[in-house]
Amino acid sequence: MPGEAAVADINVHIDAYNGQRPGIHQRCVTYAWIAMGVYCAVAGWLFILVFNLDTKGKAIGLVGGLAIMGGYYLWGYVWKPLKDHQLTLRYRLFPQIFGFIEKVQYSHAYQPGFLDHLKRLKLIDFTSSENDDLIKGRHDGMDFELVETKLILGSGKNKETVFSGIIFHFRLETEFPGMLVAAKRGNWLQRAAREFWRAGSYDELSSGNRQLDETHEFRSDNFGAARPVIAGPLISVLTWLGNEWHGGDVRIALSHGDGYLMLPADRDYFRLPDLTQDVRYDWDVKPIVREMATLLAVAHVVRQVG
Image 1 (tube, rainbow, N blue to C red):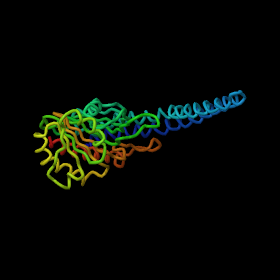
Image 2 (cartoon, rainbow, N blue to C red; image 1 turned 120 degrees about the horizontal axis):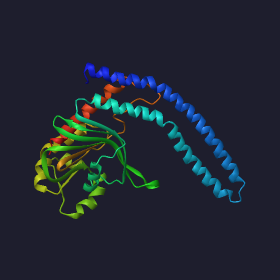
Image 3 (cartoon, helix red, strand yellow; image 1 turned 120 degrees about the vertical axis):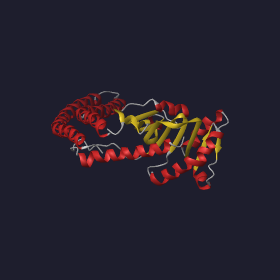
Image 4 (tube, rainbow, N blue to C red; image 1 turned 90 degrees about the vertical axis):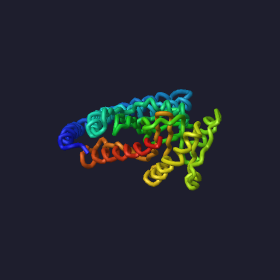
């Protein structure tokens, strides 16, 4: 946890945020009422105008659709100052509360470069991503990037969220000569494997643990190097994660000097209170620090597998 001096500095930023938040919130409420009132009046006038046209059937449907879409974007626009206010706090706060991470950097809504590598590895099939918090730095000798993200496959009505949670990218302690993937059976891997493993002699490997082989699938393009890793440390890690991680099926991939850990989750690990509420250090900030320490501990365990 941050020391007393760091906590005092953190509380300065929190107090400044809490002091300005009510005024910004009230302005947004006022702007919202005015903007939506004017918008509804204009939309109503357009409906009356279109209703008097000969082709009013199709036109009313078009105007209605545009009105709903326009109202949605206008509503987001009038509340943007309040969202930006909290985002400014995050940029000031996170580098301080994560001071135990060397060269820590925080970004929001940026796509990390390693997601493109995941596509090339075919670790998971997706076409776009919705990225939230991105944290990178160095911890106990481990260079890492972490992103909270949703991976999307398809678009429009065919859009499907194929992953929601945290993805770690880190450098392995010992380089693995090739690629090794471990995941639950009957999930994303079997769909992606049909295409990926068709390109060469990428065999499924046995861990030697009958119970684990029934639930997990292991594949590699380097059978000789993968077998001792699977039979030893990877079994222990998967067993431990199965007991400790309850957010969904964990996925692990090793590719030469890079490691990837996908931790599905149904909650925001770095969430601050709703925009209508003040931020409190003990209730809101301390839990974020604990969550980060836990996530890093999991990444360190997996990093040793390679």
